[in-house]
Length: 323
Ligand SMILES: Nc1ncnc2c1ncn2[C@@H]1O[C@H](COP(=O)(O)OP(=O)(O)OP(=O)(O)O)[C@@H](O)[C@H]1O
Image (cartoon, rainbow, N blue to C red; front, side, top):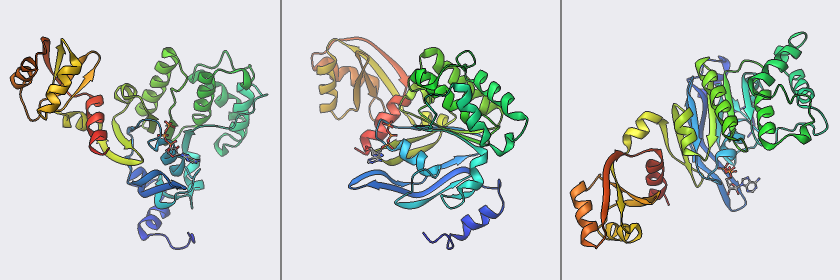
């Protein structure tokens, strides 16, 4: 790319920082590694003020998308914008207002957590001068690392390393915070703390993009979701809208769920096994037909109750359709 011929839309947005319609945006974003297509034609739009969960199994392209958004990896094709600035061309204009936790934050193994953060803080123009130590202490407290601040980074557990990366991302107030799998390696208490940090950021009006392969994580913390599958964006939008798009379900405790699943699939009724039961989609059929099909096949029905599709069902539907 020459750097002089950008689309007029991007140029206009760039001339008025902070006025962008979306906090982050990509158009036709693509990344290939040899013959591996890591990310394929992704059009992501992150509205201001949302907590967007980037959801997808391992290898679906979450990290690569995030790295391209932050200007850490160059796209093979397509464009990206961060707070209205074209990436990578003008990413330096956006980055002071963006906090990021991505793999390998580059901390020094022989320095303590606090010393590492002081080094990070020294690169923040906003903290030049007296505010530095106070900001570091506040960030350490915020992520629950104050007690371990004097220990060497190399002695930190994976969870502590994650927290230090998060502290670094939160040294100064941010407009946008991007977190790649922030609960990786954390115990349940650590996971709760990260959720609280995300909730606090959201309450303060900060836009958060958080990647996860855990559906429960996204359901618990996010207002929006973007689902990636094999490098493609299969859906994005408000979480409530996404959840409403899932039809009613019947959860059946059957005497033989393997035989039951086979019988249902033979009749073209979408179903899957889940926690020792069968979860059956009721979009085309109703409950009596499901039960009759099972009983006909000699499968006993111990219990059947109706429910709505949860994120896991919707995710299964979306990813099966594009498999
Ligand atoms: N530097 C690289 N060189 C070669 N292939 C890569 C590279 N980075 C990513 N890939 C491949 O691109 C695909 C997407 O990887 P990516 O890390 O973006 O997925 P992910 O959804 O973040 O997965 P995870 O949750 O495991 O981090 C995978 O097939 C991966 O092996």
